Image (cartoon, rainbow, N blue to C red; front, side, top):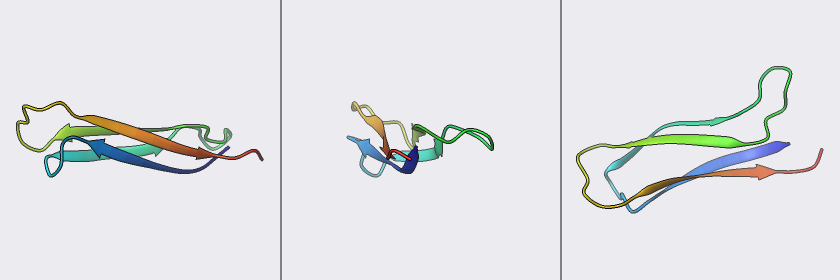
Length: 59
């Protein structure tokens, strides 16, 4: 069962925008993972990544 979630942008300091951070699951299904989406604010020539974190525990 998901108890918390977060994200990290790597290599895109000041130029990356997270536009979504959401768990899976729904009204009848407990969430078990998390996902994020991100984009560049301005054109950025470097390599960067978006990492999602899920904190889970046994019910």
